[in-house]
Length: 358
Image (tube, rainbow, N blue to C red):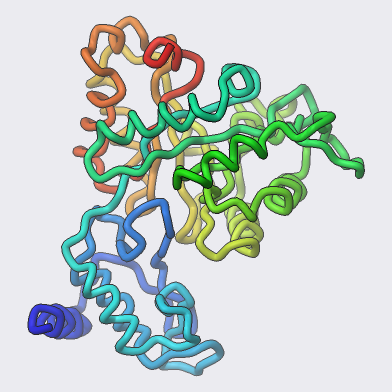
């Protein structure tokens, strides 16, 4: 108890600091902080890899607030960590009790319907993710599950529907439920990702999350921007800030803890302004060695700091050097997470996954 009180006191003293390690909007707006259940330590508001005084201070800044409260109170629903409709000492104490805990890394694979996805049974994906996570300190087994693939101007969703939508085609049967059920059972965390083509992303979010948001394994929704209207825009159309905010809000209408990820290798394809809960995934490839890969990814992480970033690795174009490593996934992931405190996930692509896990 003494330790808890001292931590809270230190946090409250930090309120008087003129400069903070995180950004706060005007008093009538919410703090840009993020509780992301299941994807990192849920009390690591400032994604620096550790629950400390800065995280406690974010909750303390909202002390006494409730929905609709007037200034000078600042309401942020994420700071109501026990969900009782107000921010009080219980919320501060909850975060303080987690003081000193490190963030968790999402460790696992990317799975797509045009590679191994349906070829392998659910047990394969579960076991591979668990093995990958076992190699990475303080990590959670995870995966990126692609269920919407680009097919020219259309997005093919791998489940059935009795209703037609513009530029969307469906499979005759559901191809995902048995896998998501298996992931639920073991606590594996997965992103549901689409390659939109010319389909409306808002519509895709609704179609996917209406179908699968009941699964506890789902941690958010992903958009591969390379495949956003690629016929009209080389390497995909850049995402606007307004779109990113709207998509995130729609995703979180299904679960307030969900996040949105945007994937590309060019920062100019990403929105210039974004809210907490938006994660940026770099899927660059074609490096001469691991140091060149790390340099590229470090620049990505720095550009989007303090937002969370993920990296997608294991491409065949890099196999010439990573195949010589004793444990390619562990070696590359350890380097990326050690050099980038906002690196929250590393995923190995299915194109070469059988090289590591036959």
